[in-house]
Length: 204
Ligand SMILES: [Zn+2]
Image 1 (cartoon, rainbow, N blue to C red):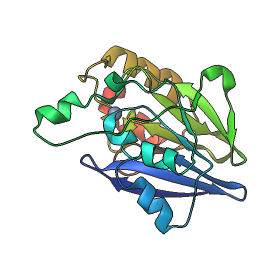
Image 2 (image 1 turned 90 degrees about the horizontal axis):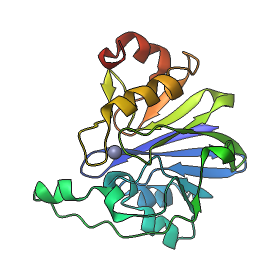
Image 3 (image 1 turned 180 degrees about the vertical axis):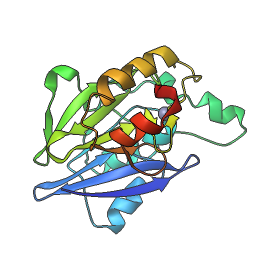
């Protein structure tokens, strides 16, 4: 399993490509993600969304148009994008609508794509539709906007956010993973569960 990362858009949002011998899977679709995949000459067999905030789904419609199925915890709904925030900043934004081909739930865990098993863990709090994807075999977790390197945590002051719920999700769904687990967040560099247990002030 080979992981590469891309960061793009207003908020430098991370998108990941996970390649195996049987194909590739994309995690999140920030602005420019599809062009980056094309440059690498990789067409993922699926796009997994950690949640549907605007900065994580900007390229989803383009990837869908290219024939890549979208997997997410909720059907497409404009409210999940929270675009109002950016429009208030006075920045132009218009996310192309897309359709979620497969609305998943924890009951389908693990979800197998390109031969890789993704354990689906619900982590509401930053947004109601947040999920993390744990690849137990390789001790990697794609964490979206839950835990960030260097002691950060996803915002919970956004519409539909809930701070207490986010902390509970992190404690129950992330901190219970082995310390060595690599964490690939939605923004910024990777970290590990063990490092965040020691360093993250929110988790004391
Ligand atoms: Zn977010």
